[in-house]
Image 1 (cartoon, helix red, strand yellow):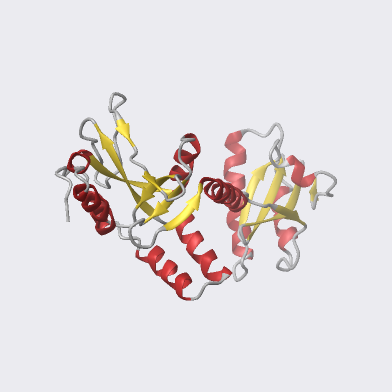
Image 2 (cartoon, helix red, strand yellow):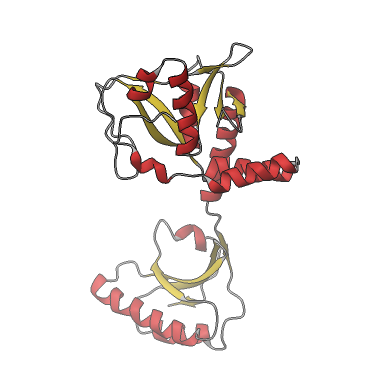
Amino acid sequence: MAESVNKHNEAVRSITNDDLLAKWRTFSIENNDDNMSDFLTELVDHATLLMVVLADQEIKTDENGRAQVDQDVQMQFPLMSSQDKQNIQPLFTDWQEVNTLFSNWSEHDLQSNVDQASILPIAFSDLAELIDQNKEVDGIAINPFSDNIFFSRETLADLASQQKAHHAANNEVKVAVAEPTNLPDGFETTLAEQLKPTAVKQAWLRVLSYDGTEHLVLILDAAGMADEALRPLTQQLGESGDSKLAGTDLQLSVVPLDDDSKPMVEGITPFFKA
Protein backbone atom coordinates (compact mmCIF):
# COMPACT_ATOMS: atom_id res chain seq x y z
CA MET A 1 0.00 0.00 0.00
CA ALA A 2 1.13 3.54 -0.69
CA GLU A 3 2.19 5.60 2.31
CA SER A 4 2.26 9.32 2.77
CA VAL A 5 5.83 10.57 3.01
CA ASN A 6 4.67 12.97 5.73
CA LYS A 7 5.51 11.66 9.21
CA HIS A 8 4.17 14.53 11.33
CA ASN A 9 0.74 12.93 11.81
CA GLU A 10 1.80 9.52 13.08
CA ALA A 11 -0.02 10.20 16.36
CA VAL A 12 -3.32 9.32 14.70
CA ARG A 13 -2.12 5.77 13.97
CA SER A 14 -3.35 4.83 17.44
CA ILE A 15 -6.96 5.70 16.51
CA THR A 16 -8.86 2.51 15.67
CA ASN A 17 -12.57 3.07 16.50
CA ASP A 18 -12.94 -0.58 17.48
CA ASP A 19 -16.22 0.05 19.33
CA LEU A 20 -17.70 1.93 16.39
CA LEU A 21 -16.79 -0.84 13.95
CA ALA A 22 -18.09 -3.53 16.31
CA LYS A 23 -21.44 -1.79 16.57
CA TRP A 24 -21.59 -1.40 12.79
CA ARG A 25 -20.85 -5.11 12.33
CA THR A 26 -23.62 -5.94 14.81
CA PHE A 27 -26.07 -3.76 12.90
CA SER A 28 -24.98 -5.30 9.59
CA ILE A 29 -25.71 -8.78 10.93
CA GLU A 30 -28.91 -7.90 12.77
CA ASN A 31 -30.55 -4.91 11.12
CA ASN A 32 -32.82 -3.33 13.73
CA ASP A 33 -33.47 0.06 15.32
CA ASP A 34 -31.71 -0.74 18.61
CA ASN A 35 -28.48 -1.72 16.89
CA MET A 36 -28.58 1.34 14.65
CA SER A 37 -29.19 3.53 17.71
CA ASP A 38 -26.15 2.01 19.45
CA PHE A 39 -24.02 2.67 16.37
CA LEU A 40 -25.19 6.28 16.03
CA THR A 41 -24.60 6.99 19.72
CA GLU A 42 -21.04 5.71 19.41
CA LEU A 43 -20.49 7.75 16.25
CA VAL A 44 -21.94 10.99 17.57
CA ASP A 45 -20.68 10.94 21.16
CA HIS A 46 -17.47 8.89 21.20
CA ALA A 47 -15.89 8.26 17.80
CA THR A 48 -12.91 10.16 16.42
CA LEU A 49 -12.69 9.73 12.66
CA LEU A 50 -9.75 10.42 10.36
CA MET A 51 -9.95 12.99 7.58
CA VAL A 52 -7.42 13.32 4.76
CA VAL A 53 -6.55 16.87 3.73
CA LEU A 54 -4.10 18.19 1.15
CA ALA A 55 -1.96 21.15 2.17
CA ASP A 56 0.66 23.32 0.53
CA GLN A 57 2.91 22.89 3.57
CA GLU A 58 3.29 20.65 6.55
CA ILE A 59 0.38 20.86 8.99
CA LYS A 60 1.81 20.91 12.48
CA THR A 61 0.02 18.75 15.01
CA ASP A 62 0.09 18.25 18.75
CA GLU A 63 0.93 14.95 20.44
CA ASN A 64 -2.63 13.72 19.80
CA GLY A 65 -2.48 14.54 16.09
CA ARG A 66 -4.75 17.58 16.31
CA ALA A 67 -3.96 20.28 13.79
CA GLN A 68 -2.19 23.47 14.79
CA VAL A 69 -3.04 25.34 11.60
CA ASP A 70 -1.42 28.64 10.67
CA GLN A 71 -3.62 31.14 8.86
CA ASP A 72 -1.52 30.99 5.69
CA VAL A 73 -1.81 27.22 5.24
CA GLN A 74 -3.83 26.42 2.11
CA MET A 75 -5.85 23.24 2.61
CA GLN A 76 -8.03 21.20 0.29
CA PHE A 77 -10.50 18.52 1.26
CA PRO A 78 -10.40 15.90 -1.51
CA LEU A 79 -13.85 14.60 -2.33
CA MET A 80 -15.07 11.44 -4.01
CA SER A 81 -17.80 11.24 -6.61
CA SER A 82 -20.64 8.75 -6.32
CA GLN A 83 -22.33 7.00 -9.23
CA ASP A 84 -25.14 9.53 -9.10
CA LYS A 85 -22.64 12.44 -9.31
CA GLN A 86 -22.79 13.39 -5.62
CA ASN A 87 -19.76 14.92 -3.92
CA ILE A 88 -18.82 12.74 -0.97
CA GLN A 89 -16.40 13.56 1.84
CA PRO A 90 -14.49 10.38 2.74
CA LEU A 91 -13.77 9.62 6.41
CA PHE A 92 -11.86 6.72 7.88
CA THR A 93 -11.92 4.78 11.12
CA ASP A 94 -8.22 3.89 11.22
CA TRP A 95 -4.86 4.16 9.48
CA GLN A 96 -5.34 0.95 7.51
CA GLU A 97 -8.51 2.35 5.96
CA VAL A 98 -6.71 5.62 5.14
CA ASN A 99 -4.13 3.63 3.20
CA THR A 100 -6.84 2.21 0.95
CA LEU A 101 -7.32 5.78 -0.27
CA PHE A 102 -3.57 6.22 -0.73
CA SER A 103 -3.44 3.00 -2.76
CA ASN A 104 -6.33 4.15 -4.91
CA TRP A 105 -4.58 7.45 -5.59
CA SER A 106 -1.33 5.72 -6.49
CA GLU A 107 -3.11 3.36 -8.87
CA HIS A 108 -4.59 6.38 -10.63
CA ASP A 109 -1.30 8.30 -10.94
CA LEU A 110 -2.11 10.61 -8.04
CA GLN A 111 1.00 9.94 -5.96
CA SER A 112 1.36 13.71 -5.50
CA ASN A 113 -1.86 13.62 -3.45
CA VAL A 114 -0.36 10.93 -1.24
CA ASP A 115 2.75 13.04 -0.71
CA GLN A 116 0.72 16.14 0.19
CA ALA A 117 -1.71 14.34 2.44
CA SER A 118 -2.13 15.00 6.13
CA ILE A 119 -4.39 12.82 8.25
CA LEU A 120 -6.26 14.71 10.94
CA PRO A 121 -8.60 13.46 13.68
CA ILE A 122 -12.09 14.92 13.76
CA ALA A 123 -15.01 14.49 16.16
CA PHE A 124 -18.59 14.26 14.92
CA SER A 125 -19.62 17.75 16.06
CA ASP A 126 -16.72 19.35 14.18
CA LEU A 127 -17.38 17.18 11.15
CA ALA A 128 -21.05 18.15 11.03
CA GLU A 129 -20.13 21.84 11.26
CA LEU A 130 -17.54 21.47 8.49
CA ILE A 131 -20.01 19.78 6.14
CA ASP A 132 -22.67 22.35 6.96
CA GLN A 133 -20.30 25.13 5.92
CA ASN A 134 -19.29 23.43 2.66
CA LYS A 135 -22.39 23.53 0.49
CA GLU A 136 -20.66 21.55 -2.28
CA VAL A 137 -20.58 18.40 -0.16
CA ASP A 138 -23.63 16.14 -0.48
CA GLY A 139 -22.69 13.70 2.27
CA ILE A 140 -19.99 11.60 3.89
CA ALA A 141 -18.83 8.01 3.50
CA ILE A 142 -17.02 6.28 6.35
CA ASN A 143 -14.51 3.72 5.04
CA PRO A 144 -15.68 4.17 1.42
CA PHE A 145 -13.58 1.26 0.12
CA SER A 146 -14.92 -1.29 2.61
CA ASP A 147 -17.88 -0.56 4.90
CA ASN A 148 -19.04 2.47 2.85
CA ILE A 149 -21.24 3.90 5.62
CA PHE A 150 -23.05 6.81 3.98
CA PHE A 151 -24.81 9.79 5.54
CA SER A 152 -26.37 12.60 3.55
CA ARG A 153 -25.73 16.21 4.62
CA GLU A 154 -29.37 16.40 5.74
CA THR A 155 -28.93 13.35 7.99
CA LEU A 156 -25.71 14.79 9.41
CA ALA A 157 -27.47 18.06 10.22
CA ASP A 158 -30.30 16.18 11.93
CA LEU A 159 -27.88 14.07 14.00
CA ALA A 160 -25.94 17.20 15.00
CA SER A 161 -29.17 18.90 16.08
CA GLN A 162 -30.15 15.87 18.16
CA GLN A 163 -26.68 15.79 19.73
CA LYS A 164 -26.90 19.45 20.79
CA ALA A 165 -30.39 19.00 22.22
CA HIS A 166 -29.34 15.87 24.11
CA HIS A 167 -26.28 17.53 25.63
CA ALA A 168 -28.27 20.63 26.55
CA ALA A 169 -30.83 18.48 28.36
CA ASN A 170 -28.10 16.57 30.22
CA ASN A 171 -26.34 19.78 31.24
CA GLU A 172 -29.49 21.37 32.60
CA VAL A 173 -29.48 20.83 36.35
CA LYS A 174 -33.00 20.62 37.72
CA VAL A 175 -33.21 21.88 41.30
CA ALA A 176 -36.15 21.29 43.62
CA VAL A 177 -36.62 23.06 46.97
CA ALA A 178 -38.73 21.48 49.70
CA GLU A 179 -39.50 21.44 53.42
CA PRO A 180 -37.19 19.03 55.28
CA THR A 181 -38.79 15.89 56.67
CA ASN A 182 -37.56 13.13 58.98
CA LEU A 183 -34.94 15.30 60.65
CA PRO A 184 -33.38 13.90 63.84
CA ASP A 185 -35.33 14.61 67.03
CA GLY A 186 -34.49 18.00 68.48
CA PHE A 187 -32.58 19.14 65.40
CA GLU A 188 -34.37 22.48 65.00
CA THR A 189 -34.37 23.08 68.76
CA THR A 190 -30.61 22.62 68.95
CA LEU A 191 -30.03 25.14 66.16
CA ALA A 192 -32.53 27.60 67.65
CA GLU A 193 -30.77 27.53 71.03
CA GLN A 194 -27.50 28.38 69.33
CA LEU A 195 -29.13 31.24 67.41
CA LYS A 196 -30.85 32.92 70.37
CA PRO A 197 -27.85 34.83 71.74
CA THR A 198 -26.78 36.03 68.28
CA ALA A 199 -27.86 38.91 66.03
CA VAL A 200 -29.58 36.54 63.58
CA LYS A 201 -33.16 37.73 63.05
CA GLN A 202 -34.69 34.70 61.31
CA ALA A 203 -33.63 31.26 60.08
CA TRP A 204 -35.08 28.68 57.71
CA LEU A 205 -34.28 25.06 56.91
CA ARG A 206 -34.76 23.95 53.32
CA VAL A 207 -33.85 20.84 51.33
CA LEU A 208 -32.28 21.22 47.90
CA SER A 209 -32.61 18.24 45.57
CA TYR A 210 -30.53 18.08 42.40
CA ASP A 211 -28.48 15.60 40.43
CA GLY A 212 -29.94 12.73 42.45
CA THR A 213 -28.81 14.06 45.83
CA GLU A 214 -30.34 16.06 48.68
CA HIS A 215 -28.69 18.88 50.63
CA LEU A 216 -29.99 20.49 53.81
CA VAL A 217 -29.54 24.26 53.84
CA LEU A 218 -29.77 26.58 56.85
CA ILE A 219 -30.54 30.13 55.69
CA LEU A 220 -29.75 32.95 58.10
CA ASP A 221 -31.24 36.44 58.03
CA ALA A 222 -28.20 38.11 59.56
CA ALA A 223 -28.49 41.56 58.02
CA GLY A 224 -26.19 43.99 59.78
CA MET A 225 -24.18 41.25 61.47
CA ALA A 226 -20.43 41.74 61.08
CA ASP A 227 -18.56 39.15 59.03
CA GLU A 228 -16.16 38.61 61.94
CA ALA A 229 -19.09 37.37 64.02
CA LEU A 230 -20.97 35.59 61.23
CA ARG A 231 -18.11 33.38 60.02
CA PRO A 232 -17.48 31.53 63.31
CA LEU A 233 -21.23 31.23 63.86
CA THR A 234 -21.82 29.55 60.50
CA GLN A 235 -18.94 27.17 61.20
CA GLN A 236 -20.32 26.35 64.64
CA LEU A 237 -23.83 25.77 63.27
CA GLY A 238 -22.50 23.60 60.45
CA GLU A 239 -20.49 21.39 62.80
CA SER A 240 -23.38 21.11 65.26
CA GLY A 241 -25.83 20.28 62.48
CA ASP A 242 -23.59 17.66 60.88
CA SER A 243 -23.10 16.05 64.28
CA LYS A 244 -26.87 15.70 64.70
CA LEU A 245 -27.21 14.45 61.10
CA ALA A 246 -24.67 11.66 61.55
CA GLY A 247 -26.18 8.43 60.28
CA THR A 248 -28.37 10.18 57.71
CA ASP A 249 -27.65 10.96 54.04
CA LEU A 250 -27.78 14.71 54.69
CA GLN A 251 -25.15 17.32 55.37
CA LEU A 252 -25.84 20.87 56.51
CA SER A 253 -24.79 23.96 54.59
CA VAL A 254 -25.19 27.39 56.22
CA VAL A 255 -25.77 30.38 53.93
CA PRO A 256 -26.87 34.01 54.43
CA LEU A 257 -30.18 35.35 53.19
CA ASP A 258 -29.27 37.05 49.91
CA ASP A 259 -30.51 37.39 46.33
CA ASP A 260 -29.72 33.73 45.62
CA SER A 261 -31.38 32.27 48.71
CA LYS A 262 -34.39 34.60 49.01
CA PRO A 263 -36.50 32.67 46.43
CA MET A 264 -36.05 29.54 48.56
CA VAL A 265 -37.81 31.06 51.57
CA GLU A 266 -40.47 33.29 50.05
CA GLY A 267 -43.78 32.55 51.78
CA ILE A 268 -42.10 30.08 54.16
CA THR A 269 -42.42 30.45 57.94
CA PRO A 270 -39.00 30.50 59.63
CA PHE A 271 -38.33 27.87 62.28
CA PHE A 272 -36.44 30.53 64.27
CA LYS A 273 -37.40 34.15 64.83
CA ALA A 274 -35.66 36.49 67.28
